[in-house]
Length: 316
Image 1 (cartoon, rainbow, N blue to C red):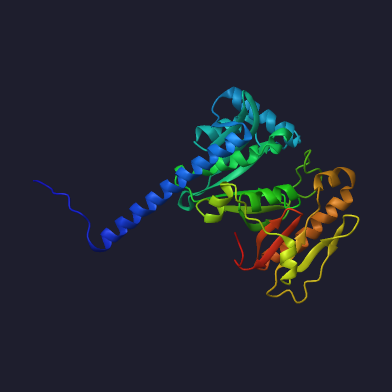
Image 2 (image 1 turned 180 degrees about the vertical axis):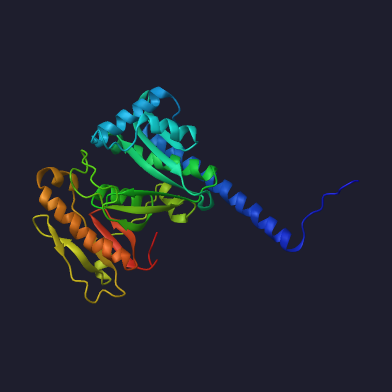
């Protein structure tokens, strides 16, 4: 018996054409993402590669240990776990300045049907942060994920850390999706101290135009002054001595709401832990409550303000 291949017709042809176009779009987006990642790595003066050797796993563990200074009984990641993640083809990558590891990032796959992964930890040395090594790592991670057919990457960060808020929401155009109260429990490390570990869970839509623009060096900037002129209300402000100042949300329906964070929460945790904890409670009570009620973070001003709108209005 001879079987002849035939071209699909009707609905089948339309579906096939759609699949072909979608595949081409994904390839084009991944190509652009790879170009952006190479440009970011060159600008940071690093080489980024996946890690697979024992010496590299140990070096990555030591890097994270220097950055977080964790409780020995509660480490964010171990060399053994890094090996397991790598063996299972998850994302385990390092940024190298010559032979020196100056940054690293680890992510693991989520449910297959969701085409997603969760980025568990990203850390860079102090000098690497000034050179935008973190940005280079995240753009590399995006290209890696797109090549594997993923649509989103999620991760968490401390909403009180202003520079991380700007990095995630503006520089990367990630969208905060959920406020998580004391997500990790007591961490008792060198960065978080004894404070509660509240986190914002963000979702990174890898093919979104705003994300592609951000990874190309055009961040999703939102500034407070124009928002105030358009009638935004302050849900949480700052006193002159740097303490949280509750605002007035009466009449905020339909209006943009601004929520402040301290300029340097890490210094506050060392010098005035009671004030740092007051900020934790104030931001939880304002930002967390607003997000739970349907508000969405539309941006973050580098001066230390979250910009929240109703629903999806104004989101990057």
